[in-house]
Image 1 (cartoon, one colour):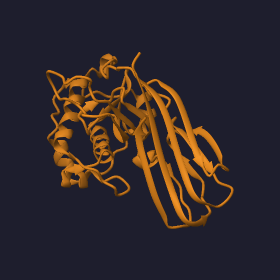
Image 2 (cartoon, one colour):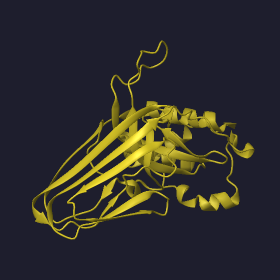
Image 3 (cartoon, one colour):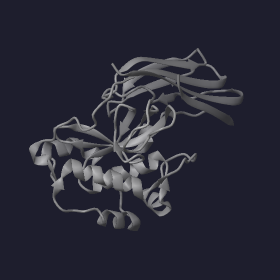
Image 4 (cartoon, one colour):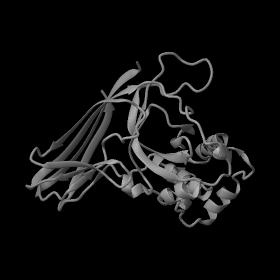
Length: 288
């Protein structure tokens, strides 16, 4: 049995008068393919008078549609998740023989199914230059992905960015800095240009402080931590979707809880909606 953690994620919008709240979409429920066992899930929405319908989008993510029949002065969404952080080996998978070395080609049938995750954006000069520096010699596929992920983590500094949206690959490479969603999207594009099918992931990241300081390697976080996070997933024949986190340079483990996995970042936003009013938004995410 692993460590049980409780995540409480609260988002609140306050209006300066009663307003009509248009339908909202929520992507705040652990994805069906989440490897971390989810023991409990609760969603609380205010105003209490609302309609909620859960369904799966074209990419199999859970998506909730909220409809509010009456005007209100505030909108509050609170998610509570209890997860079992049983240790997962991120390399516990097998790869088909033909894909054990890179470069490889997806079989025609699979390539057709993966088309939305292989569509590449136009490469700018900085992106093209970075791509050219990636070794193209034949090598073990998993080792190649490990190196690609770690090199990107070293090349791009992490920074908190409050502006909405995702930077273009050129912006991230020019600034040599980006939020988790910026480096995740950069990695997705790198993987696609290198022939891999890849997708953008939005979810929760849980990191627990170690009980003892390790004798070797990094010490890890000094205190328990959780936040909304973004990373990438690559499709490996025989293994399926495998997570890579360019913010840390590591493969995704038990602390990565995916909420939405999509070909484009805009389709993975946790909350989408609108209303007629000036708003103030307060939010928080914590381990309980």
